[in-house]
Length: 107
Image (cartoon, rainbow, N blue to C red; front, side, top):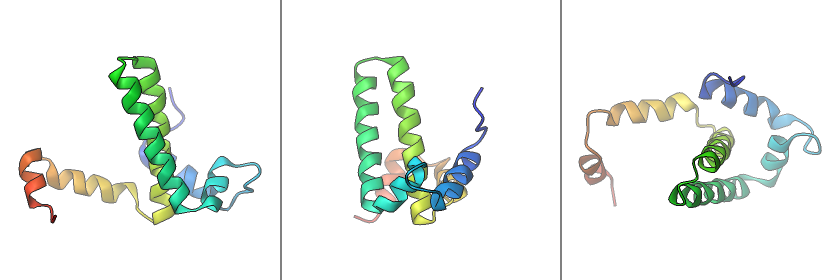
């Protein structure tokens, strides 16, 4: 089983590496590159996840999903977004259909 039992644990680990040596820490290296590069990486991982899922490649979809979640958390740390804020947003949507929720969004 994973060392990370919650998104919060992974988030905290990534956050702690923000000030690490960029030559020894991937997280620190990405933080040094900045938000745009991190956001670009989230997009790349999302596309790779979709490609593997569309190809019905379960193992690769799991691997790419892990990459996607990791980079999304990296972006959240960069932006100061705590996982619980996202969970609160999801909780607000719990009893709303996706169609109704989209109608409420501002265009």
